Length: 82
Image (tube, rainbow, N blue to C red; front, top):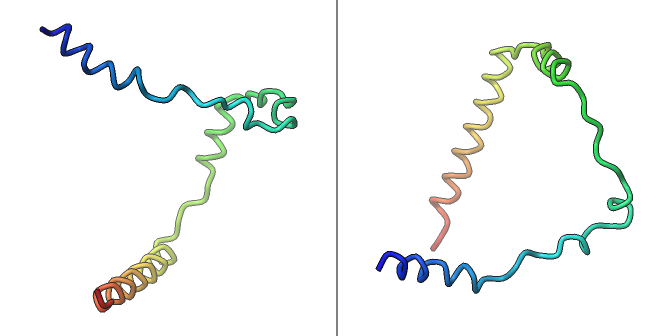
């Protein structure tokens, strides 16, 4: 009984479309290019940590502007005729 239930679940997956042919979507330039160069992770992490800290005053102003814009859009949607 379990085997029949498993087969019934697998049949729709087997009937689905196959994998798309992605090789024909690539341009000749992208096929001719090599793999990207691998770089060590430590310098990348160090540069990410060296990012200057955010200033709360400017972040707060941008958030307040976003909130005002979202509220304006919400009011527009509420007043929109259906």
